Amino acid sequence: MSTARDTARTTGVVVALALALTGGAVVLGGGDGAERPPVAAGPAVPAPWLGGGDLDRGVSALRAHLRAQPKDFTSWATLGTALVEQARTRGDPALYDGADRALDRSLKLRPGNDAALAGRAAVAAARHDFHGALRHASAALAENPYNERALASRVDALVELGRYAAAASAVDTADARRPGVPVFTRYAYVRELRGDVKEARRVLDRALAGATAPGDVAYVATALGQLAWRQGEYATAARHCGTALRADAAYLPALECRARARAGRGDTAAAISDLREVVARQPLPGPVLALGELYEARGERGPARDQYRLVDAWTALARAHGVNADLDTALAAADHGDKAAALKAARAEWARRQTVHTADALGWALHVNGRDEEALPYTRRATATGFREASFLYHRGVVERATGDTAAARGSLRAALRLNPGFSPLGAADARDAAREMGG
Image (cartoon, rainbow, N blue to C red; front, side, top):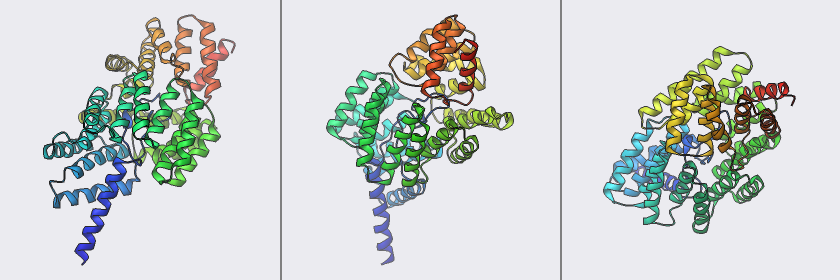
């Protein structure tokens, strides 16, 4: 009797995890590979995830199930996708190797199955291979045009490749085939990239109103909080992130978002406390850099250096497991490391994909290496779509000032500070100083 109950319990957990990973609760996007400005609001296209304990239990249950049913190709595909998500939540890229093995096993058992192809798209995106992610997502959709994870991954890959018009078309297709939280949040981000913050907020509000599962509530509320933070609306951001944390107290993107909102309002101690918890559980470059800069702004250079070295350690680990970490390197090293390495990495990333984020990274890397005339076209390209990102405006203003265009520089720096006066504890202070010196 107990064996039967245990088997039923294990099967139930496996089925629940499979539904979560293939349905609305969890659709994997770019993970940490999704673009983000330095010390900004987390992944550009964030993905919801099961609480760490649930996810870990689900992975363990899947492994147990597959030991008993090793020819279950669907569960192998689910395990591969779950390992990608587990890698992201732990900040551990070594788990991608296990995801590869599980997905390969699924495809060997059932060649061309759309679940495993969609899982491969997730692994490719997590490793920042967005051309590969697009290829695998398209292959999955050729097998099953309604595969939700593949539809979402295709949008993510097009965004990460800078193909914004194609991303807008892809998200319309996804909405027609599988409307729901994963599609709504991607639709909102595609609109935000074009400067339509009002529509992005409207869509996210709609998604939150329709969300019932705690994971969906946490995901969408955090996306609303991040959007508010980018507009300098810190009280609104904190409110949304509080909603997310009430739905799922373990949801680290919400805790990171709350930390940034607290820092923007001047509560540095609380922000550091939140970020220390995030970094302890998920040492990804975004929150690690944010914590380092908060320490540095308080004059605590030793703890700040420790955080910057942690970014170097993570990128080395990521590269060892097939992750392209050039954008992370460019963003971190330009301000806190080897400037020549930052430029090399930024150039390599720009050669692979031309987006507003890679344009900004290359422009800034050129600037810190004293090549401002070369930098100017890239900083202008970073702000050309209408995407409202204060760090981009700040970088553009600094480069404009360095090239002698004082009027343009004053306008760009003022715009950055009007939009989000706490966009970075170091950059915002530098922007204010520069604006004052130019009479702003």
